[in-house]
Image (cartoon, rainbow, N blue to C red; front, side, top):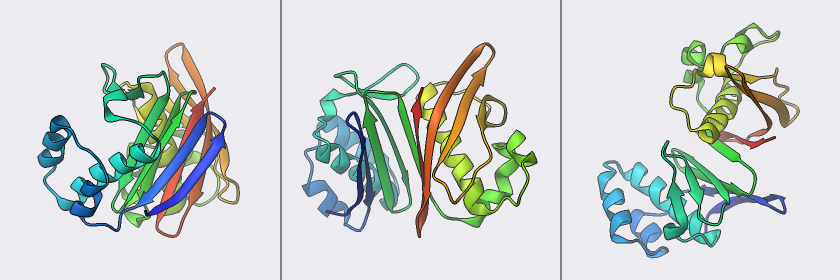
Amino acid sequence: MPIIEDLTISKDIRLIVWEISETINDLKTEVMLSEDLLKLLHQRKSEIHKKQFLAIRNILKELSIDDQDLLYDESGKPFIRDSQNISFSHSDNYAAVIIGKQIVGIDIEIRRDRILKIKEKFLGIELNYPGDLNSDKALIYWNIKESIFKTVGNSGIDFRKNILVLPLDLNNNYIKSWYLNDDQIDSYNSYYKISKNYTLAYVIKG
């Protein structure tokens, strides 16, 4: 089973990262898929999207989460029937899931330099921070902002204006971040890491 990280962050929060090395058939044989899930699987056109879908289901199985207990609110944000919160992410051959009683979000991205070409689309004040903005740092900013976005469930978020991340220190793995919208101010404890092939961040509200 290609679980490359299984972290118990606290007694209420657990995170799993899966490296996809199996075939589609191998991934399918490990899980029971309902008719609805099979339809969702077949709607995914590319092989990698099918694998990512199945890898998430394998992680849910590892977490003892039945798909019948995985629900979605009006904004499309997933949650678990027993009031636990859940967030998942995938990029290329990696998939990640975090669950917890607190509000949590996660994002994983393959390390690529092209993130710098779109930095103005998701960075605001962060572009004015001192020091060089390399691709890893830009990816971590994206990871954190995307993780917060997943917890909010508001499709109208402007990553540049509504999500603020303090200056990153890549020798550390923690930073404070905020979601700002009119009179609403929500703080997040944000954790991140740079692996050989990917960057990852997860956030905990409060």
